[in-house]
Image 1 (cartoon, rainbow, N blue to C red):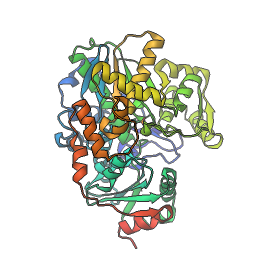
Image 2: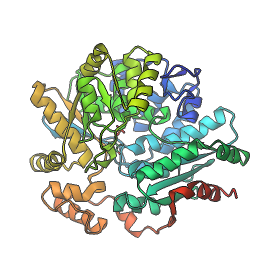
Image 3: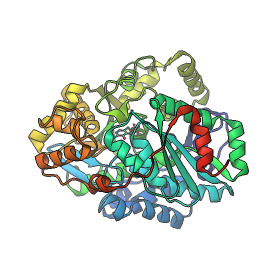
Length: 499
Ligand SMILES: *Cc1c(COP(=O)(O)O)cnc(C)c1O
């Protein structure tokens, strides 16, 4: 299987190259040349397989330059019981025609673990396969979830260093503790005096600094990124769409072959795109519900065909979806325009220069056939946490609540009573104060200690505090450095032992 760029100006590469490079040289995203189909029988058989074997089944279709035993080693290391508990993606029955797919049983309690636990293994093998002798330095600027998930994934992975920058005053107390207590001999974490944009701008500048790259290369290092445009992050997310469908049939929630709906809390469009690819590969899906918070660029795009990023970014109670440019949408448009790379390159250029682009009426209709879009405001999000708890004794985190509410809107508008799987992307324990407010036990502010809030949530809901939270309370602070954004490069060199 070879990979091509959505912008058509760079050559075909193997999967190892696609994973190593992340972004294609023309600025486009790598996509597989074709999508293999999986027969229904084989989909259903995934119910009886352990999760890591399901992952190998899917990954082996795309990563054809990895041997099956290599992929098995990667998946077994990534999805161990120690890291994810007995099932990395359990499907919970919540009410009559709606289930929740819990994707947050990994080390950082967010769905990003599912991809970021396996990516480092895929990446270090990609280095070997491409004959590269350099070691990888992963750089990330984070507003919270991604940085921690990447740190956990790359910690102590041989041949890698990971350096994460977070805005000193811009992450939640739990998120900050998660990062500054990070273990691993190859991990470095820096607070930045400034906001997320300052941190991100700094990282982008470092990525495009040719003389720094040269200096690093002479010492055997190369920069790479772990963000969600990497094919190695996207492909592992296809697995749980297939697995959850097989589980739903086995649990007699649906009949074999019956079409289902997935409701997905969406930010960068990575998670929901993996679902679209699963459908393309033969999974019986009627439609996807693309759920947004008040940063509703995607809702507008799906409903009008105009993508317009020129608007203020709102800070919401579902912060991991606070995003104005959903990078992975480019892959969907490439596919739905029958691989029209020239057109994609034009739209992306327009987005850069004018802040918006408009797709053709025909393409816009194709998007709407596949995706129903809805957005959910702050009050509705909190209210949904309360009503689902009261009606079904199930506790939603704010991101999942956005998807649940969007699914309700879909039912109201369409009267479609089809079975819906709501993807749950974070543990409620990551956002205790908002959840406590939702279930009527708090006012939503971050006043008390995060551990007191977790204990109050546990008392109210009778769900035990997860060990990822309780261990944090005792963990030693290992990363104390807070630096100016202008000093990022010099601190990277210091961390790597280059003077
Ligand atoms: C990253 C994230 C999302 C959004 O996923 P995308 O793949 O970026 O669309 C939703 N919820 C949580 C909790 C996340 O961390």
